[in-house]
Amino acid sequence: MSAFMSVFAHLVGSIADLLQPLFHAGAAAAAIILFTACVRLAIHPLSRATARGQKARTKLAPQIAELRKKHAKSPERMQKALMELHAKEKVSPLSGCLPSLLQMPAFFLMYHLFSSRRIGGEQNALLGHSLFAAPLGDRWTDALAHGGALGGAGLVYVALFAIVAGVATFTYRRTKAQMATAPVLPAGPDGQQVPGMGAMTKMMPLLSFATLFTVAVVPLAAALYVVTSTTWTAAERYFLYRDAPVAGALAPAV
Image 1 (cartoon, helix red, strand yellow):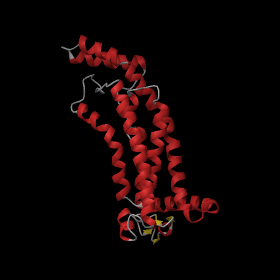
Image 2 (cartoon, one colour):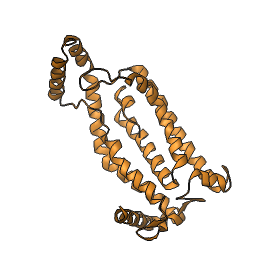
Image 3 (cartoon, rainbow, N blue to C red):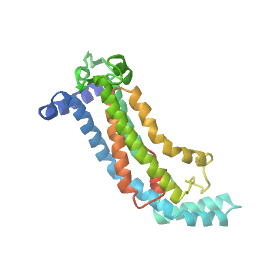
Image 4 (cartoon, helix red, strand yellow):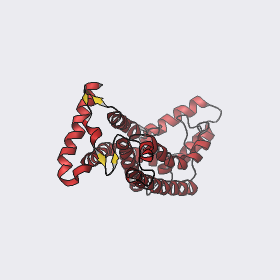
């Protein structure tokens, strides 16, 4: 792990060096944003595939309802019929969480990189970088302790909170509108509604605001990753699901 962290630290440092002529003291912060964009760009094909799958599953909802009614007394036949339907339409019965899962290692790498004082037995030079007055290795509590919410570092967090709140509000309103238009609940592979999914679906629009808590407790570098990724997700979902009122609403938010 230590060797891998050293390689990752070198990668972020090299990107920051390349960006230094343009961003000067904020080169490392710009490198984090660029790295996040590259991660999201790399998994974008999977996001598109997920969108296609969710749209296809939405179109199959009437047929699934018919099969559920037809084979209500025979779960085995219903299971077989559903699998045959999914195979015929080339649709996976499972929700597409792979894009969300694939970017988690990148986030944890960023978190550990800017939480470690030493990398590979040497001082972590990246901790000397900052975004304006806020060190990339500090947290919101550090900003509050040195200057308060309206101090130099505190204002950086105010800006990040404002961005996250704006994106979360946009996502919340769009998700509520989508669910009001076609409030279809996802079903499991056997075609039955997943227990507790109704309550979970009602809570989904509010999950967008959970990012505010994440930004507040992680190092600023990891917060930049989260803010960039969340903004990317909102824009990506808008374009991928603009013609699908249900699929976008039920997609996992990241």
